[in-house]
Amino acid sequence: MALLTILTYPDPRLHTVAQPVAKVDDEVQQLVRDMLETMYEAKGVGLAATQVDVHRRVLVADVSETRDRPLVFINPTLVWASDERQVAEEGCLSVPGYYDGVERALQVRVQAWDEHGQSREVHAEGLLAVCLQHEMDHLAGKVFVEYLSRLKRNRIKTKLQKQAREARV
Ligand code: GNR
Ligand code: NI
Image (cartoon, rainbow, N blue to C red; front, side, top):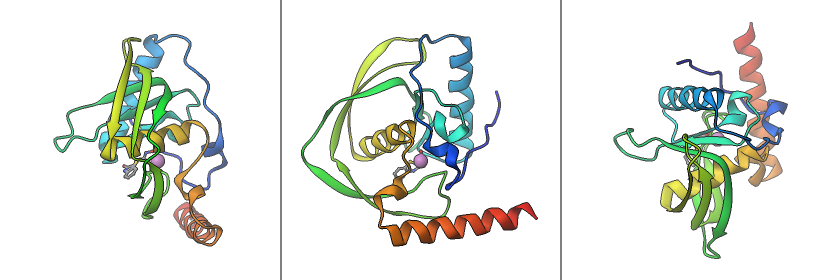
């Protein structure tokens, strides 16, 4: 097991589009284990491979209170999204310290492989629906701040750049 480093916005690598996984082999299973360990350690509800600078279509999540219900989605595809939408407060491990409302579909159906390469479909609502859409955006190279106004996004960008600069010295 290994903890992976999470990229911080505005790192340009967060805008890389992830490539599909051809086969769930040992290497992919190791990536999944490391991503779960990293997500739990960072106290996140989800993590996309893009955030750990691995540009493959893999995401993990756990929206349980008890933090013992890991979910693995390999090559996720959105098969359905409700027309009904909702604004929910979002945060991101790659945008530490910033939270804002984002409008997304209230419910989604996502098809994906699990860690054994088994295909399954999940109907999600609530936090899991928000999380899956947020993580699938990461795999497409998109960070939630891109839904905010340019003013808010630039403010966040400037502050995080300053923090990164101060952390380096
Ligand atoms: O830990 C996380 N919490 C969260 C809260 C509301 C909406 C989305 C999220 S995802 C985030 C972890 C993360 O950055 N995943 O990419
Ligand atoms: Ni995120």
